[in-house]
Image 1 (tube, rainbow, N blue to C red):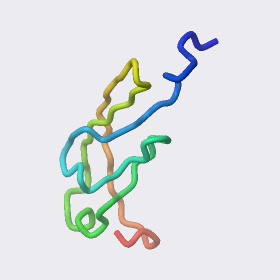
Image 2 (cartoon, rainbow, N blue to C red):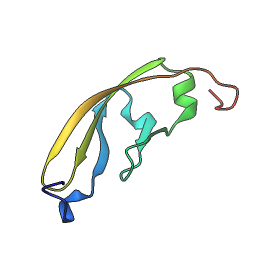
Image 3 (spheres, rainbow, N blue to C red):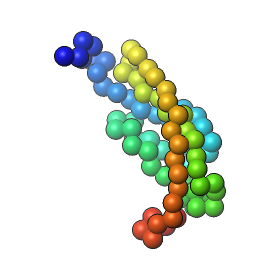
Image 4 (cartoon, rainbow, N blue to C red):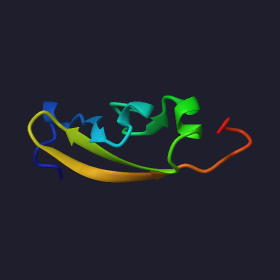
Length: 77
């Protein structure tokens, strides 16, 4: 049983920093990270480091996420 399961049980995710963070976006309800600027990614570095945060309105935490970009025929990269 989750002791703080109430209004604070909804999680909100965000990108809070990192190299070229504006090239990415994060769904605030799922935490899924997407490429926001494919043209900039395809000409940039192949590895990115982002700082991501999550909060439930009462507690919060941050983590570093490393993203490695690979070329794909379907992605346009």
